[in-house]
Amino acid sequence: MSLLTLGTVAFDSIKTPHGSSGKVVGGAASYIALAASHFAPEQHVVSVVGGDFPQAFLDLLESRGAGLKGLTMVSDGASFHWAGSYHNDMVGRDTLATDLNVLVGWEPNVCPEGAQADFVMLGNLDPAVQLAVLDQMSSPKLVVLDTMNFWMDVALENLKTIISRVDVLTVNDEEARQLTGEHFLPRAARAIHAMGPQTVVIKKGEHGALMFQGGHTFFAPAYPLEEVVDPTGAGDTFAGGFVGYLCARYKEAGEVTWDHMKQAVTMGSVMASFTCEAFGTAKLQSLTMNEVRDRWSEYTTLTECGPMVWP
Amino acid sequence: MSLLTLGTVAFDSIKTPHGSSGKVVGGAASYIALAASHFAPEQHVVSVVGGDFPQAFLDLLESRGAGLKGLTMVSDGASFHWAGSYHNDMVGRDTLATDLNVLVGWEPNVCPEGAQADFVMLGNLDPAVQLAVLDQMSSPKLVVLDTMNFWMDVALENLKTIISRVDVLTVNDEEARQLTGEHFLPRAARAIHAMGPQTVVIKKGEHGALMFQGGHTFFAPAYPLEEVVDPTGAGDTFAGGFVGYLCARYKEAGEVTWDHMKQAVTMGSVMASFTCEAFGTAKLQSLTMNEVRDRWSEYTTLTECGPMVWP
Image (tube, rainbow over all chains, first blue to last red; front, side, top):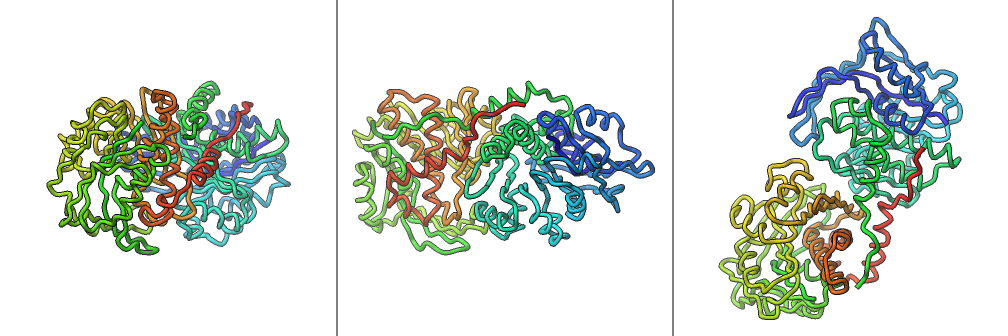
């Protein structure tokens, strides 16, 4: 079982009402690969970095089983850089800078081993780039797509094309509403099913995640943190935990069932909670499987209420 | 086992982007008593209405086991009336009118049987009125308090006094933040524990409810509705389902445990979902126990994901 992930490997500069990160490693593929590494031992990352990117982080990814043959290195270029500032609620944020740098004109290259990957995680990027990667895949068993409202505004046709070709779409609640014109999420999910994806995961940040498939609905709460230090990358981490767990179950069971999907959403939620506890990928870099197991055990008690006694 | 409920029995006029209710029966005690009636066969309602209030609704309350000896009837007065208009998200709303009418100067009277009630539900009202009712109670086993941000603005000292005397406080997330100055809900709950209540229920509307007690946390999602017709009274209905279920369990088990509390929060969430399906109390008035059981069965599958398999 192997997982191929497309996404940025990049720098973030994050301000919150409580502190500043300085320039730290971020990017969707960084979060996804680190989160998935606890479950999917063989990974391939498709991305692009500049000569300014720290080799130490690339070494870390490789040590976690992420092959980097699909990582384009532009020695005389600068890595993608995002800067943003969170509001007091730690949800709303203002973008201060989006320096595309080496992303401009980048054409993704999937290596031969990567093209054989069983699972594909298309992290948030231009739908044209997501399509270019999917076109290079041999015959993946499951394709998960993440996107955001920006692409709905500027690249809706390409976005609809890639959506029609994936098994699972992950978006947040406002994006689901924008994409479908439906306010209530069960209806929005049905409209997205009609676009192609059998499974729709609607992320609601601190309010958890809803998943829809074939008339079934599942809800995973967010782990209630004492404090959110930095939510950047939580959605990517969620996706990494989700698809990584599916890889692990597929390896053992030879299929992806609705039960596996439900467990994967809870695992995504648990993994995302860790990312929020520190700036950037700091917490994910040091996270151990024992910490994951402990939090998951605590997490599952959140919604267990025992058998109802009816009057 | 009996339940005494304090709250308004009143009129609402509700506008939404999809329709208008006209003048319909509402008020916290109406929702609470109807929701609780499925679990608590003996109730007492403490409230006040004017001569304009429909006898048919009072008859309905009595037919559901709600004693009305504590209901003051001001024949030449007009009932409390609230008018509001919901935004497109069916969450935000503007108040168009608040006609206090018979609420002005009303002094609540608890009848002798009501004073012996085992459980007390203090619905949202002036904290001075809530205190006046609690002072008339003999020795209730459990007191639940609901309130809102308005009383934090205009009657904070009385509010703090009543909060210090109750077992359970139910507020929404923004109210919990305003009351405590803590943004993150686990911290807000701890601050409320320090004010008195052992159990804190934080309602998040469409995002479910969190409950905190003695270091334990429980989360109940909201039932994902296809469409919200009118959320007015959902919080009161939640409270009614919650405290009603606790009454039923107390009758059978002779105590209120954390497990009972957890089941009660899920029951509150299930009951609240029905209220949102129609204007005012319309759905609650016709609701059958079979509908409650069916929805609860479906509801519990929302968060059940089966045993995790670790890689």
